[in-house]
Length: 457
Image (cartoon, rainbow, N blue to C red; front, side, top):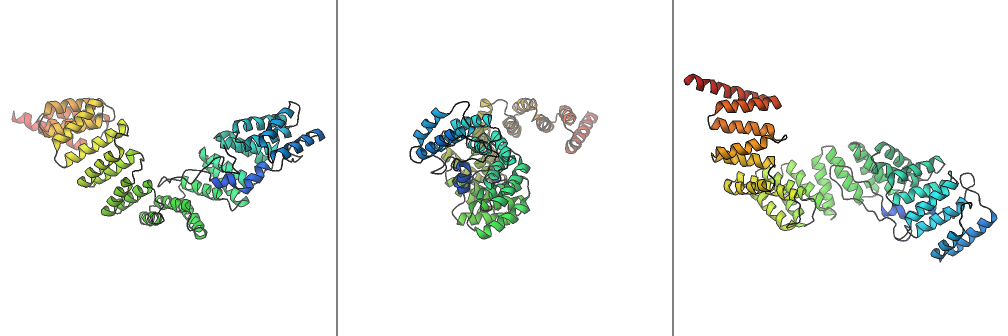
């Protein structure tokens, strides 16, 4: 693994935005290459007596030799220093070795060596701070946060440490602590992109969309092509319910050739919300044409939008395109969602037999699929196959999430078959489970029909 000063210890980039939510917290590659980070981490192998261990003349000589070797022969310098460290030697030697391990990308050894230094000298400020950075690189965010906070309490006051601490807190869900750290980082290191992005993340995460938008607009005045700001701005506008402005922001990204597949789908959703259905469909088709395998459920949701608004032909074609794009590369749950949508399209377009076949296949694979059971039962009712419908309704009624709906729909079927008494019994069961005014009115009407039928007899 390379050091951050050469290529990157941890290569990170701006995240793909989760539209209408805060962007994921990330540290940019620039964080690790920031001269302030390099200076603060590496230093000059020197020490500050008030918060760092003293070294005797013999150890000073060893360190001078090590530093000289490290200029061109880092591995040799490490091997040499390893032979000079013992339990009674100064923590300063452990610190130097830990830093060299880090330079070589040997992060676990670096962490262990810094910990040894701190056992010898617990208030060793730079060892504490560097340990936090190493643990950050290793993904040990909770430990990193503790050590970075401890370094700050010992007197460390550089903006980079606050950026790293803010990142740890935000990643761990401690948004208030993260915001405080990022604000302090901005005061101490105002040019830090990571501090600015982190504060934006905090504002969006806590739904302070207006404050986030004001900050983003201010930042874009000085950096009009900043992609993070443009993407985060979409989230802020959506959070404020300003869909038209969010469309403009997404179209701006599109003109910059920076709108990814998720963003294209979101643009389609926004056009749909605004009633611009043709534009919406074009965005959906464009997103699918990119052939980027996002979660299949995201594409399926798009098909459902088309179907729900009555665009059955477009919805059906979209489903076919999904199958061509994904092939067999999706899970059973995703396949089930696609098949259910196909069945809904066929029902809506009067192709009941084809829909019934799809539902039968789904039920055979998953006998306790409540949604498929209910839809199959309704189709059987339409075909006046009351025996089959009753079996499906009864099976669905045994599933907690579908029990009430199954009882009500079963009762409707029985009313069609003029079995008012059994229908009334089922509706009473449904009301005992989940009282609903419309069901109460329906039950009253059924009881009146039942009474009229008895009087006639």
